[in-house]
Image (cartoon, rainbow, N blue to C red):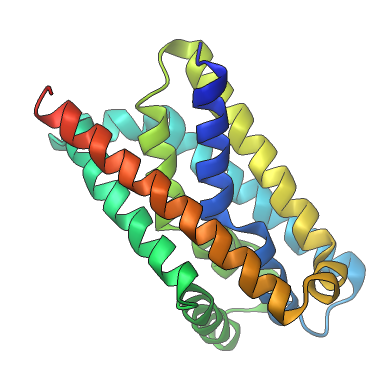
Length: 209
């Protein structure tokens, strides 16, 4: 069973990576013209699909890495670097630009009823960063109890995502442009520090320091 510090670290890492406040305005753009009930359906379905994806990687991600001959230390280093890249984008406002571009492309290609799957669940919620973070955290959780706790953390994070999507219109008005920019940068700095810790732990693990 994981300790309180490990659980807080797991929750913070996943929440910052998924970035519910950053998803809210993008969700509004994707579902433009939909009724409140239709938006709720898309939000619930997208969050449920993203939870399933992250839960599968929490349970079987390490097994997949082992089958490919990749050590957890190496994956921690690679994942930490990837998370640092996401943090850099958040701090310098590149991430939202990329997400908005993904959203615009998807709307022209996919029918509106499939928005919950793409691009909402993948890659906006359960993107490469969230999947990498999940596998990294799963490697630090021991036994069935640890994995169950991680899935619980994923559930809480996705519940907060669903809440942010459900309150997207109000949240967007409340935060405003300045509030969103400030929150995104603060979360980016926090994620940068956590990603460096992943790299440090990966180096220690890889070289048995």
